[in-house]
Amino acid sequence: MHPVIQEVTDRLVERSRPSRTAYLRRLHAEAEAARLRGPARASLGCANLAHGFAAVGESDKRDLRANVKPGVAIVSSYNDMLSAHQPYEAYPAILKAAVRKAGGVAQFAGGVPAMCDGVTQGRAGMELSLYSREVIAMATAIALSHDMFDASLMLGVCDKIVPGLLIGALHFGHLPAIFVPAGPMTSGLPNKVKARTRQLFAEGKVGKDELLDAEARSYHSPGTCTFYGTANSNQVMIEVMGLHLPGSTFVNPRTELREALTRAAGRRAVELTAHGAEYTPVGEVVDEKAIVNACVALLATGGSTNHTMHIVAIAAAAGIELLWDDLAALSKAVPLLTRMYPNGQADVNHFQAAGGMQVLIGDLLDAGLLHRDVLTIAGRGLDHYRSAAELKEGELVWEERTEGSTDLDVLRPVAGAFSPDGGIHMLDGNLGRAVSKVSAVKDEHLVIEAPAKVFDDQLELLRAFDAGELDGQDFVAVIRYQGPSANGMPELHKLTPPMAVLLDRGQRVAIVTDGRMSGASGKVPAAIHLSPEAADGGPIALVVDGDPIRLDAAAGTLELLVPAEELAARPLRGAPLTDAQWVGTGRELFGAFRRAAGPAERGAGVFALNGHAEAVANGTRPATAQSGIRA
Image (cartoon, rainbow, N blue to C red; front, side, top):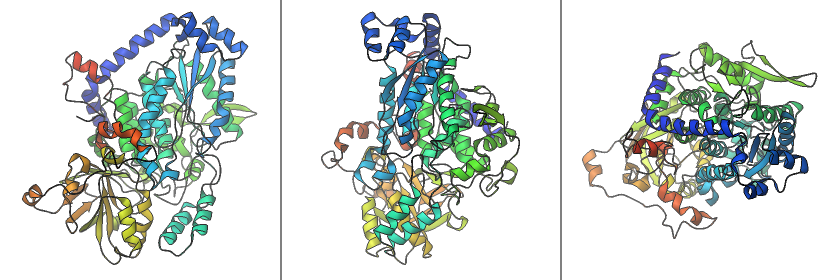
C-alpha cells in the first residue's frame, strides 16, 4: 500500500472511531433483527401490510402476503427532462421481472427530484441545486421508511442525485443498496468545438441560432452528457466504491449489454439480502477504505470539484469524518491518469474504449493506490472490478481485462501519468480555504498576482464584460455571497466563457469565490468553495477593488496581500440577500436550508455526522466536534 494512502486511511479511521462505532452498532443491531425475523414486512401489522401490497398484481400480492420472499425497493430519479435520467423510464419493469425471477418482489418505493444544472445555469433555479441533494436524501429515507424492504435499487446518475441517494441509503445502512447506472449518450459534437462556439457567442461573433445548434448537437440523445463533469465523476466514484456492478458504468443506454446489466442488478439485489448467503449491507460497503478509494479515483481522473463537498457529506452519513486535509494529502500522492474534457479533448466514451474503469482500477490497485480488501456488491475484494462485462451468446459474463490502455492520450498507467499529482488542489491562506481544479489549467496560468475586481453577483461580472469594462487588464474576479448559507452556492459556470475570452486575449485573470464552478469548468484558474464564506463573515467580505491577490494553485496558497492590521480595521462589505429578497422560483421554500447549511469544507449540508449524537451521549466524542452542520 502506498504509504500516504495508508496514513490518510489510518488517520480517518482514528478520527472517525467514535461516530463510526456508534453507526455500526446501530447497523449491526438492525442487521441481526433482519436475520431473525425474515422479510422486513414480517414486522408489520395486518392493516399496515395490506396497505403495502394493495395495488400490486395478484402474483406479487400472494408473495408479499406470504412473508417469505425478500422485498426490494426501487428508488428512482427518472424524469423526461434530464437526458441522463430519461432511460430510467423503462427500468422498473425490467428490474421487477429480474427480481421476481431471482426469488424476490420489487416495488417502486419512491421517486426523488432530479434537477438539471445544465438547464438552470445562471438562473434562479440554480440556487436550489445544492440543497436538492438534501431533499433527495430525505426523499430516499421516506421511500425506505415503510419497513417493506430488504434491499434497494438506486436509480440515479447526475450531480446531487447520486450523493443524495447514497446519503439517504446510508441512513438505512443495514439494507444492501445497488446503484444502477443508465450510461452516457453516444458522442456528439466534440466538446472543444462546443466550448469554442460558447466563447464566440460571448464575443458576439456568432448568434443564438449557431450557439443553440452547437449545444443541440452536443447534447443530442438519452444518456449522460459525455464530458467529464460531476455526473460522470459520480459514476467513477460509485464503481470504485463497489456499489455498481463491475464494468457497468459507461455502457451506453438502449443497448443489449445495458439491459443485461440492469437485469443483473435486480438479481444481485436479492442475493445480497440478510436472508441470502452474501448479506452485504451498504453501511459496511461504505467504510473508511471505500471513502479513500473514492477520493483517489476522483483525483486520478481530475474529476469534478463538486465532490470535494459531496464525498465529505457521503462519508458523514456513514459516520466517517473526512476532511479537506485528507484530500490535500491524497492529492500530492495520486497521479493524474486521464484526459477527458474539460481536462482534455476526449469524452467518457473514448475513455471507455481505451479500457475504462477496468484498466484504471487495475493500474491503481497494482500501484498500491487503492485499497484492495474492501467489501463490494460483487463480493469481497476490489479485484472483481478488473473484469469487464460483455455478452456471449446472449449471456452476461465478466472477464478480467489483462491488457492496458489502448489510447495513451486518454488513459495512462501510473508509470506514465499525465501529472505526478491529482487534478484537484486544496488552497489555504489568509482568505480561507478553497479548492482549485488544476488538471484543465495550463501551467503558465497556475500562478497569478493581480488586483481584485469585486462582485456580489455573477450578473454584475457578466454586465461588466459586455460593457468592455474588463478589457485589457489583469485582475482576480472576486464573486462573493455565493456560499451555501448565502444563496445555496450556485454553480457559476456562466462565467467561464467570458473569462476564457479574456484569458485567450492574453490577459491574466482568475476567479476567487465562495460559490461553485461547474464540473465542466476548466481553463480559467479559480479558487472556489472558499470557506468561511462571505455570509458567515469570512475574509472575502473584506476585499475591495484593487486589493492585490495572489493565487498559487501549484503551491496551494491563496493570499490577500493586505496588511493584517488594515484588514482588521475594515468593515464587512456587501451582504447576502435577505429572506424577503430571496424569493421566486420556489427559493423562499428553502430559507431553512440557508440558515442550517454548514461550510463547504464540511460538505455544505444540513445533516449531522451520523453516529455523532450517540457518541456524545456515551462520552466518546465532544459535543462540539461534528461534521456537516453549522456549529
